[in-house]
Length: 302
Ligand code: CP
Ligand code: NVA
Image (tube, rainbow, N blue to C red):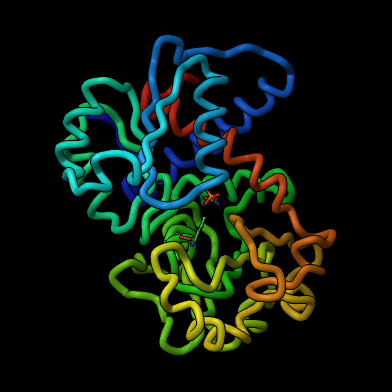
């Protein structure tokens, strides 16, 4: 059975901790100029059913740096876009590549890829989860603020893939997740794990009180574009701004997975201000995903 990376709650907190710590080592070794090419002769196949900048570039760069080669498949321009099934696509591409990364719509499409694949499948974002991004964000948080266990993360905005993955991480790694979204855009209880890791707030500024990390994301995720105008109105108050950061703890950092819309979910003074670590966060996709890919293909190496 291949070692897939489909969602965080498929793993123990201890295994996620291993991957985050391993990413720190991989990053330090790269910065020290060490060559590490365990994927020589291997091929990563990336399947994109939605747009991407960071995921595409970080997976591709990371796999090359680890010695391998990459094939990039877009749904438009491949037979997936002409309705060849995910199952048949998985049967074919997993006989050629050593590892698959997929960005798609419902998690059921990703699960379908994994069930029919002979090789590990990594979640590069679904409607429900974005696990590579959240491991990256925890790595970034810990570089700036120390261990995340026992800390408080405030999520202001949509109940989307990022929010649900933060909730999983909070449960597994032992921190608090404050969450606030407008009425009509509440969390789906089926996607939130039971426990006292999650606290829901009506007020977006109160949500940030006592937080060590304030984070948000676009009001309209990919695949929901037709709701854009309605969402703009509904989410107007769910903006991270100077008031949000003033409510957070001193030394709190701001993160956003990007792409961002200044003046919508975050003001320019916050995302471009001294508490923002969004560029470190973007770079860390490279390092965190190397640890994830290494785990899927080679297991624990230290
Ligand atoms: N954060 C993120 O996943 O960015 P892309 O959509 O550019 O890949
Ligand atoms: N929630 C966003 C994240 C983009 C990286 C989306 O799914 O579009």
